[in-house]
Amino acid sequence: MIQPPKTQPEDPDHLDEAEMVLEPALEQLIADMVERGWDRQTAIEAVLRIAHANLARGSSSQGSQH
Image 1 (tube, one colour):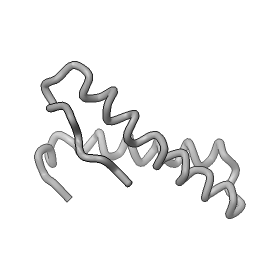
Image 2 (cartoon, rainbow, N blue to C red; image 1 turned 30 degrees about the horizontal axis):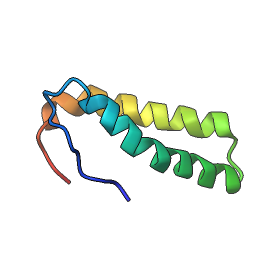
Image 3 (cartoon, one colour; image 1 turned 90 degrees about the horizontal axis):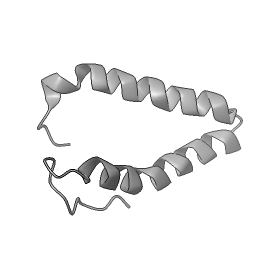
Image 4 (tube, helix red, strand yellow; image 1 turned 90 degrees about the vertical axis):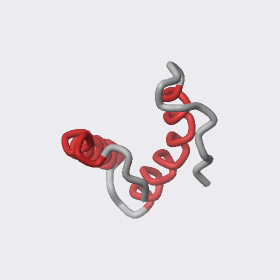
């Protein structure tokens, strides 16, 4: 389960906190893909590609919550 942030975006350790919260979920997602036949490197590269695409369009959707 993803926990709510304890820090604010302006806090210097906000990104570090987000990484710590997100890492287990990403590791589980990658492990699930590997279990279903994907190789680990491809799964990681797909996650990176999605992250980069989100960064590219991120400035237009900052502040939106899902």
